[in-house]
Length: 371
Image (cartoon, rainbow, N blue to C red; front, side, top):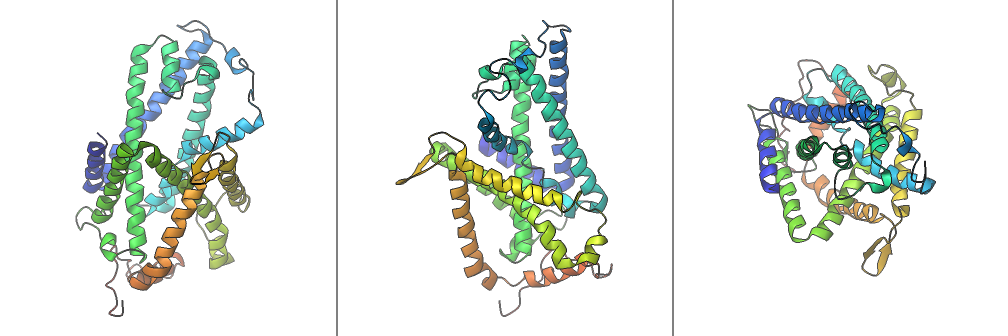
């Protein structure tokens, strides 16, 4: 089943970004409408409209707020981070947007607003209906809440919505991974063949195919080695998105210093509350990374060493980063030279010195004979 889903998502991404965007829009709309419907049903149950009145007493029952102490809240905070994974995808789409200066800030603002409102209100309603102590990790709490309201049909529909949400995540992950691979190849860190796009559909065909193949390999490994494969993939996922967010926040002050004050003042869309925003982001992400070692539990035994809490995610991530750093330093930067011209033109565009006639090519220039 995983192979079929990955194959379908690969075809959708190969058709073109417009088709993929419409497809993703439909899946995302279904998710948002389903969550909004749950909120409406939940509020009706809280108020006793068509249901036995639940009220909000469950919010203070079973130990009240912070029943496990403040440390449990910090532990849960690390899990909540996952709810926002993928929001950085908006920035990845900038290059394929018709008007990125307008579309990217607008997409970021509305994405954050909708996600935060739906999540906060949705969790409030959920906890008012379903006691937190009875929540299960083997099923969706939203489905359990609907079943407690004696709505089995709607609960079944919600199950399918959750499956659709998972498929949507696969689609978004494939899009992001392929574009990152395409960008890295264009920068000269991978063979230039991966930076070529289909002349008709304007999508990086080879990058999409390789990204989908890696996802398929992951599914195969998860089938034969479920425990170890899950730990490895989940660890890389946890470290990966936290590291990406850290780099995004750190790049703000570094890029401004590199470009100079005048360039920063002329930005069309500036980071709100700069420099406070990137500072808070860096502190929060570093706290989440360090906090992985203090999430409780028995830890993970790696050979003779027991890594406390969820620290295995950081250990695996650091090892993975070292491996690719060695690849870049010892091989990529010496082998591939096709990224130099692209970087020069990219810097020219960023500095506002490129003219309309000097359009930036989609495909990289041929390597020099010395490469």
